[in-house]
Image (cartoon, rainbow, N blue to C red; front, side, top):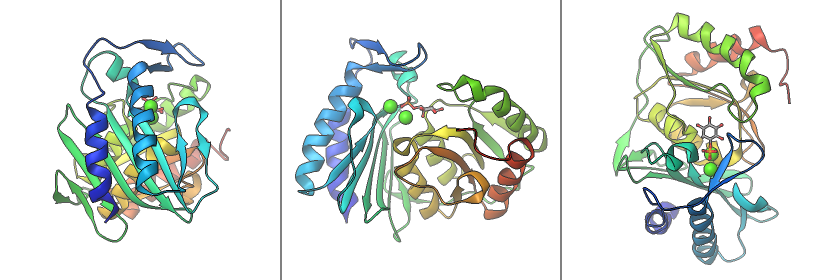
Length: 260
Ligand code: IPD
Ligand code: CA
Ligand code: CA
């Protein structure tokens, strides 16, 4: 099993995450930051995971690391929830996915300060701290929605707010934790039921997307299309296929095509 080999490396990488004492740098907008810890975690993971599968490629968030013409590709977000990390709050994690021949076959999401390790291997179920997890069976009306207003692409925030409002008015309530990987893993574990983000990057959803599927949930892109683990896209999730499709339909009331 790949996850057995990935877990100790991810846990060691988490030793590079600190509560304070790191540098914070701005990327393209003031909302989009990177810390010295993101870079340190990524360097560590690339070195160690590359040795695990010689000849494997990488698609990583930082430093434009995009080398995907290989049988095995690592898709890495060194810290998902960097804005939380930079504030010293707990909702952040390391996300590592392994794709073979274009399909994600293993995913590990580790949040050291939530003390949560989510893992999945294709066809072998999903786990939180080694215990199998399943999506909840709550209805749409009972469902808890996790969504975001597209922080890094604020030109889409108005549309996001209309979609979120529409779902919110027909469901239980709305949450926003600030780490897409953690939120998707919460969907897998039955803590939330409904998920919508206008634009995520592969490293945000690759590992957690497999974890959702292996927990019995549904995840897709705009129009219900399968997600491409190497391209950015809209991410829609549901504890059931019906709830996922209801979000797909809701999105289509406000958008006839992806705006990017
Ligand atoms: C972000 C988080 C956030 C989501 C953003 C992501 P980052 O990742 O997952 O929850 O709303 O779209 O980009 O920048 O913290 O790695
Ligand atoms: Ca991210
Ligand atoms: Ca990140």
